[in-house]
Image (cartoon, rainbow, N blue to C red; front, side, top):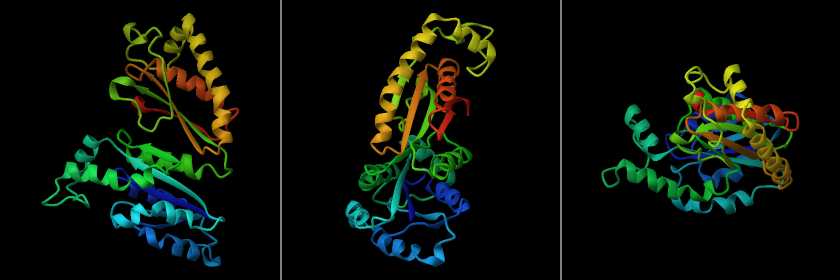
Length: 284
């Protein structure tokens, strides 16, 4: 039986992720008490649920805090026939505060004695037992609803063989390193096309920018070094039953150098990894 547990802080997109799984054929339950997880698994293993792809549940801070502390033991008590995956969604604190302000929703932990900022921090502490057990963590700070749905579909639903899902992501350091990155490569030592007037408004997917970077002696050397590292260590991650890996390539603005190298790495590794995806964070 396939069981997907969606968790994360309020405002990070849990409902969107759960709705996507429902659209993909999962039997979904929102706000399931942790203590009822074994009962759900027993029920969903019956023949009447055989037409579902699996079960997906949202477990978050609306649970009693004692139940959240017992999450690991409850999860370990599930039958060996259950293939469980935990997805933890999160976003930066200012983003979460902004989202609640814009929607005028009430945070489940906030109240007269606990303002919003404190509630968000308290929620992080309560969900720590789930976060540390998560196989996949997604930072939705700069994702739209559609990008989040695509990420869930590609990285969960699209991988049915048990092989490792590899995401290659370009980003700009001026907007921060992606918090869900497993490996980060800084490519700011390459000449910056931003300072070439004709290339400034283009990006690393444009032919003129690619030609500029390919003419630089350091580009092939850097690409080869990154590939050498990944070729050596990605198989070890895969052998350790790692389900997801995010390789982040960063330059200053996330428009030229990182985009070019991320796209080149994607073309290189899609031959060896059937579930390789690419995302250009600053081009979204």
